[in-house]
Image (cartoon, rainbow, N blue to C red; front, top):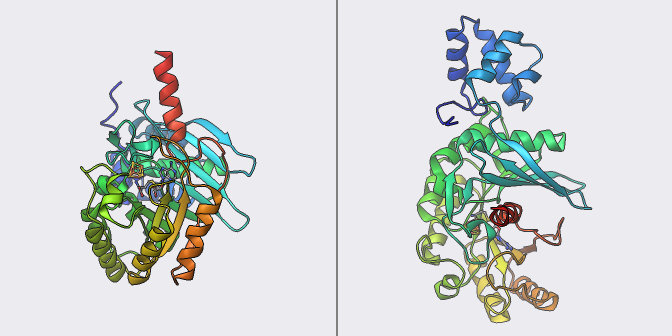
Length: 350
Ligand code: SAH
Ligand code: SF4
């Protein structure tokens, strides 16, 4: 069934809810009650909205997609990290990862089905872009994840499948609703937007003038090295990316992080570490090292000694560096791998 005409309840504005109630000849306070379920209690299923009359709950379920997506698979690692495969209304799927630590719970969310950038080491881009997520779908990810976790997250990072800045209209509306006190009221400083360096998108994000954390997936110290990892079509020159990120820093008032996926023999030499440290110092950015999880292509993760030497070189050059803590899964650790495995299974089943 083609359901594309139905609006999403997650992401409905106060005006849309008021208009819906007015059309049903219901008083305006009903719209406020629905909004409180959605944005206060993070509940999207009308049947759970216990203070609404039955006919209204039925009308909501008829008129809206509420929700349109469902959790299709869940894998929980021994350390409690959970990966959800969320199936969308058209049977496409995306992933979210729920990462608990003693201090905080982080949700890692997707922004697209597949990814048009196609970084050669990443499972998300293997089949290109299938389609963009809508604002409602992005918000449903959050609501379904928090239902699975039994609590709201402390942090939200958009490091799942897709390049959110290439889906700017829908993604920015989700960011706006997430951070607006009129809706979710989630502090922008607890939200991280990760980008592979899509320059026009970084500049538009800056224009939102919100204090989101920005993570730039740099992975290289020069354009030649970067070209080995990222195809030409959507790859911008490093100098332009850093310019845009500096603009973000000035406009949004937030320093940024340089994400650096470490790959054996490509970007892991001590010489490269020196250059990376110099870039980070010049731009007041901190570096986050991510040892490769083998997912796509023939790339390998550097051995432990090489990673340590790289990290030490950066800190002794006076740049701030952290290493992504290895959590959760030995296999299928990178975002996009659960979806990719399910696609492979489907291919076999056909
Ligand atoms: N498209 C955005 C956000 C999603 S990817 C971006 O590229 O930033 C989030 C992060 O995961 C990126 O830094 C990406 O380089 C990293 N990543 C993707 N596949 C990986 C893999 N197989 N191993 C380690 N890091 C990976
Ligand atoms: Fe897309 Fe990011 Fe994966 Fe590159 S690393 S293919 S930009 S999701």
